[in-house]
Length: 217
Image (cartoon, rainbow, N blue to C red):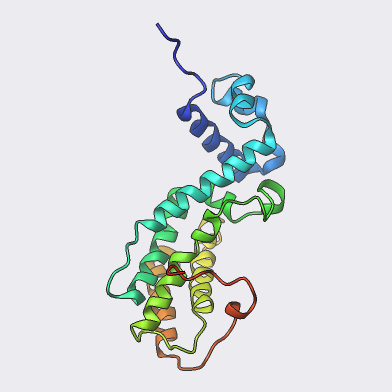
């Protein structure tokens, strides 16, 4: 009879989530492969076999966080109301962060310390932002957003608002007696409404050389 596979995907994911919790709570300096193995009730040999090194573990951790984030945003399917799609993507952003605070922190913390270099990062990193930009572009074609506005600037403002509000919650810095959960969607809707009402041309990222490609390209 074949021996059971011990260094499998289930163990890999278990190690990643335990590592994420450690980094979230105490930073990358506190991450020890030996301690991680002990916490997961496995051997250091298993950890090295799966990740190669601490750097390999951190790189895999970042890629797993990206993968799950992309999957969650991808559940927001395009509708015939692109402006509402922008809001729904913002809601999905928050849902991912609240459900996976450790992985969310890996995505938006100090990448220079724990993540691959710019050239080594997975293409999926770009994909986390693309659905929002695409929704704004579709909104422009539908006449919901002004054609003179840079869709990446509109998308970035929504992304930044979502990130800021979520970060207040996860860092424990919500204003007293004001729950972000109660006003999050209203804040996004107010922002989107503002962009829909604005007729001022806004240029920005599209001319900087870092433009997110149109999904049709």
